[in-house]
Image (cartoon, rainbow, N blue to C red; front, side):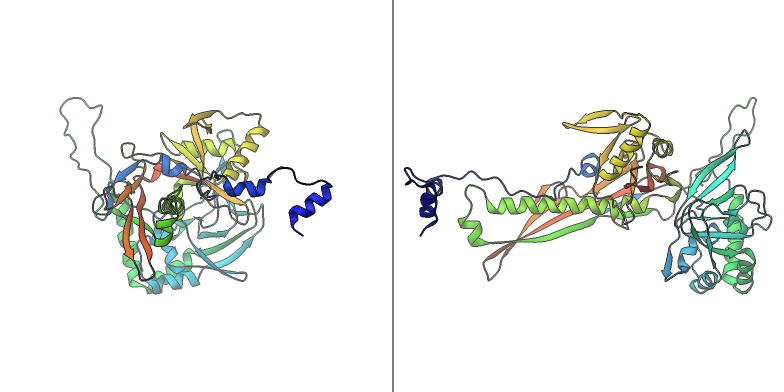
Length: 468
């Protein structure tokens, strides 16, 4: 017995008209184009100014800077034992540019591990500085004295930070602030005594320190650039100073990165199943969408040119209370002029919204392309799901100044490549193989460059899962 007969028997009466199931065999079906959940708003690709690159390389020329080590240090953890990677000691000011692996390994072995409880003072203001501290894990605050005698938080230190490095070069160095553990911390300590013992046996290290001590005689501005000698406010006929602007001898060059795939379509599908939609066009459309999603992911997370990895350490700040507060956003804004946009994971935007609600604040919104985008101090906060959220439910918020004219962050592309369907994106026919499969090479060239360090800032380690 058929299903239709069962239904008629259950209803107790015979069918009096054509059923819908049979009727559909003669009807035309209206279809949608293939849908794709992976497609996101991709605000970074839309808002980043793009610069066309010739020769596949973009060189960022800057004034000569006498760099001091202020980078982040990486550690290796084995069980409860933490060790610093020897080459990472080159981030300390005293060891910037020093490359003797043997000496660095010995220095790394002399670092002593110490566990510090939350609330414990690591270093006290006014005491002699005899050790450099490498913060492997945890969070600490630099505390100073305010203008009215009360304690004032000068900054927040997190994983990979270091402090007290002046002790390695200056035997009379004093602590200019107090460092207090905000959470339980794991630190590695290298004493000046151990450092000097290694230097006494290593000629290369002594030579390096001798060269390093000659640099402070060079007058620099607050950014470490060679100062331009000027005269102002003078009268009469004094000698006018002579000067020149020096450039970096080896400026950084950004080579265009690449994202590629080979799209395969059987010729039978391409020939016979093209109505009402062209199968080749739809396959290419979805492939290009996936390629653009990967492109934005690389612009955020690539270790070579990604924004999260190219932000200078002094442009990275930590939240004062873990959650992204209006105070933290104000500090992030204050680190640069003409901030054009924020980028944040949607969960980070929600966490910031909760903090605004607690204070009774309502952020303004602006209309961009028909989308209502929240702002802070007039700067739009664009959602970007490519910014990672860690297992500990922490994330980051990126602030950028953009454009070549403003010495900001720019996107790099190669416009005019063969078989281009969009700027710097090509679809190239690769032929048909013996199985009658048509192949297309889909390629995108891209990168990003930070023209000056303060164009990019990051609010790190913000908690996105706290609801209290």
